[in-house]
Every structure is written in structure tokens, then in C-alpha cells.
Length: 565
Image (tube, rainbow, N blue to C red; front, side):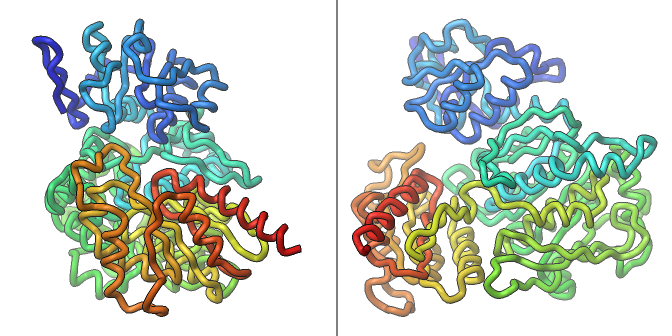
């Protein structure tokens, strides 16, 4: 991105690293965030504030994030103006900010250091044992699960290992998660925290390629189904970015191989990286072996994974066995749901040699969050916490108490027998997984969805796939597209109606009237409530402000219940 101011050009390149080896948090000076109320920006601002950095920021309007930051003593300005950055030594932008933003222009004129949000996260990672989580879907849930396990069992794991064996302090981790976590008491815990432990858990946003800057100890890839093609252009370039990201891991790569994008990535990994990659899958070994070349220490029986773990603990990450140049495989077995109770039950098969264990281990897991996609997310979390030194059985027990990340199958109320749920799903695969999970949790209910597409470009790329995913629901209302960083005039033919039209040719019961477009969110919410009856489940779906409609629907349901008395 480039803008010309007078005779000078301002270029914003999120893929270019802004800091060198000598830079630390102490060299930032006063740091100003443009768009501080965003999920990713607010987390970093809070972490810097906890680390003692002087932080300020601006946004268009107040929200829960800006309220929290203000309560912590962060100066927040509303409206983006040149005077807001006066005196700032470092100015942080996200990919939604353009070079002609008045605060960018003023910062450039004043000689301030202008950095992308990923530069701040990379700086934070450099001082910790970093675990980064990338992927088209599941980043927030997986990083939240890892943080939950470490927060709730890290001290216990440290005590179990004894002082002589302890290499990393797991308790009180730092985390930078693009959303809140549902606490055990039902109160949301903010996704940013600077802890006293050695571990930092962070989401690695792949949308603009900036995640290639990170040098974590552990790099997780939850999946790599093509997305953000407005930036990458095609699936091949998207996948190559993940190969680069994985290659920067200092110790291990942990990745699912259940989607074709991830399978392409694992095939493209350099041999040295593949040798320290651990793959997990719900598929039979024979099936997955036809797609990617995998080592299974349980089948081979050579125990080289144990050698890998020892070396990884010494931060080399290189196996000593000369032929151990392919990924290891962890299987997810016996996926099942206990009818009606909403849990997801499965077994993780850890092969002999994994993390220094001599024998194969089968770890039973019961999750409160439904869906096989969450079984995958939990498996990644249990693998990486085991590699950090925790007993996998302890990690699994702790995962069973996780209530979910906010806006991930979050039940916000039940009124008159109608359940209201909110979910962040905004990619067709995420929506399909969400609706499959809803069917598993509420097998006898009518599922009604208020869907808000996110980005004109994503809607254009996935029109037919959105329609197919939404057809898993019984009743759907599609709200106007949430534009985020895009403009309608650049996509004149793309509206929510294109999804409705594409769905019209799909087989569905009933075949007519099950999907429609609304003129705005509130009218869509009212339509869903009007259609609902006791026993139904209403789900708001999307990455924009559709989440605000849960309170609207609950209010309408309460009003209707009052009228019926």
C-alpha cells in the first residue's frame, strides 16, 4: 500500500519486518495503535500496557475493547486525527489502515517508527517460548484451549516434573488471542495477558502474509483451506506462505492433515522441517498414507520421536536418526457424541516414542464444545502442551473443563424454549462444521440461522460454497454483507442476494422459502424470531456485528413470551 504526501511516498508493507535483533519492548517508547478497538490490536495494546510500555490508541467509536483499555489506564481517542500521534515514538497499524490515514501521515512527518501489528507480536514472541497458531479455521479456539490448559494445569505440571527436570515455566502464560475466552464462572476473560511464565500463545493471522515474520518455538497449522485470495491470488501462493511459516518454527510444527490444503503443505515441507513435524488426523492411517508420506513411530517401532523430544528440549529440534525425515502421525479415534448432552468424545492415539514415552498411549478426551472440528482443535492443544512437558492425560482432563472461546458456539440465552447461540464462523467450511455440531448437540431441534457474510471478496469467491453450507440449516436469513476493509462500489454485483440465489437450486426440505435476504440485521433478527417456536435454536453467524443481534432476539423473545401470558 502506498500514498504520496507532497514529494514523499508512504509505503505500508505488512510483510516487511520492522525490528532487528537489538530491538526490544524497552526501545518502543510511547506506542500508539490506530484502530485500537479491534480484536487483534486491543490484545497487543493490553499486553504492552501490562509490560509497562506507555500505550495510546484511537478508533472510530467506543466498544467493549476500548472501554476495557481505558479502565486499564490506556489513553483512547475517538476519531482518527493527526494530533493523536503527537509524541508517539512507535505507531502501529493493521492491514485495514491505508497510507493516507491522517495518523499515518502525521507519524511519517514526525519521523515516528511505523510498524504493522505483526511486528509487535513478533517482538513479544522473541522474548518467550512462543506457540503460534495459524490456519483458515480454528485459530482462536485452539489458542484459547492451549492457554486454558496452561493457565489451569501449568503449575501442577511444573510441580510434577520437579525442579531438576523443569525446563519451561508453564504456569501463568502470556497469550494474545483475537477474542475472549469463556471462563469457568461464565464471565469472559479477555484474550490478552502478559503472564509471568515462559510461554506465549498467539494467533498467527495469515490474511496478509505477515505471519511469515514469526519465529516461534512451536508452529501450529489447524488447516489450510484456501482463503484470503484477495491477498494471495490463488491457492498455491496461499499454501506456500504456510510452508514458509512452518519453516520458521524453531522446535516443532504441529498440523492437521485432514484438508487438502494442509496435505499439499506437508508434501512441500523441506526434509529438515518435515522431520520435526507432527501431523494429526481423524482419517485412517491407510487412507492418509495414500495422500502424504508419514512416519508412524508406533508402526516403525524405532522410538526416534523420543530422541526428537530430547533434542527439542535443548532447542535444536533435529532428530539424530538419519532416516527420520518424514512427519510423525497422531490419530484421533472413535469420534462420538453422547446423544443429547452436547459433549464430544474421542481418543487421541499417541505413538510409541512420542514426547519420550516408550509405549503407545491412548488418551480419552471429553469436550464440552461439540463438533469433530473441535476434536481436532483440542488434539493440537494437547499435542503441544505435551511437547512443552505436560502429561497428556493431565492436558486432556484440563481441556474437558474448557467452555469455549467467546463467539464460538456461545449459548447466550434460552427464552420460551428457544435457544440463542452466537458463532464467529465466516468461511463455508466453518459454517458447515458449526451446523454439523449444532445437529449433534440439538438433534431434534429446528436450526434457524441469521448469517452476515464478511467481505465482498470472500462472498464472491465462495458464493456456491456458502449456499451449500447454509443448506445444512432449516431456515436461513442472509443479512447485508459486512464490508470491513472493502467497499461496495468495488464489487457492484455482490450482495447477500447472490447467496440466496445460489441456494435456490439446492435440494432442501422445504424446497422453497427456507432462505431469504433481509434489508438489515434487525429485520433479519425479527424474521428469525417470528418463525421460531419452542425447541428451536437460533444462531447468529459471521465475523461482523451480527453478534449484536443475540440481545435483540432475546429481547424480542422475552416480549413475545410476555404477550403470551
